[in-house]
Image (cartoon, rainbow, N blue to C red):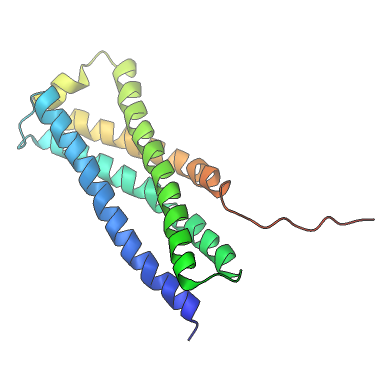
Length: 173
């Protein structure tokens, strides 16, 4: 058994679950607080709950794209002569940075989607959500998730630019 790969698997499972739970919980709380305190939307509002579900799916999809860059970083670092503790700490540091970048990017995409919808239509989407207009919520979710699908590869490419690839030897002649 390859101990480094087994350690990677174990650390990835634990860190993915914990980060996923934290990200989803944080996003859910932000949206619930924003909807309840700022907009006065009831927690039983189906339209707003559909929007929250779409945002959670969008954020989760975008952040899930960082798994391969995190694994690439781990493989590069593990190929050097480092202790298991340093390997785990490096994995967590790079993983945390990549997840933070992906999360911030995902939230920008969400707010961009809301902005695009509000500028495309004469409808006040927040008022419609408050009035429990499910149709508006579904259109908002479609816009947000479509933007997530379109931008996720660029976000992953941005994150890959932080991977500590070793310098390749220069070929002479």
